[in-house]
Length: 81
Image (cartoon, rainbow, N blue to C red; front, side, top):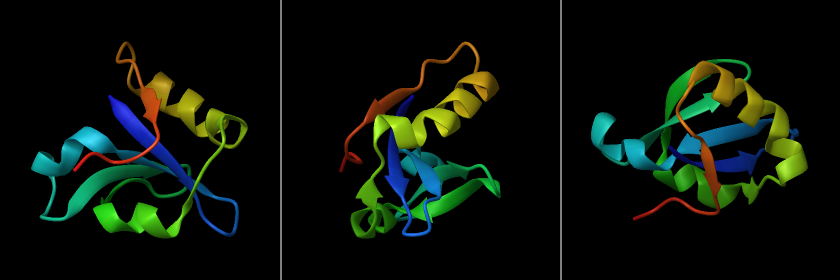
């Protein structure tokens, strides 16, 4: 599972699941945050947020790995077209 981690100005990190566009409404991908958990998000939303560093997204990545055992979550740097 390929995931892009982006950070909001308030410090919250969002995981955008790169390979889920076919499972969502047009122009959207699945996302995950600590608060609110799973939701759809616009593919373009990530363009307005900076990439989260490995230290910033580490807690969210641990949470995702616990949910998606034994699926491997691979951080990537951008959403695929």
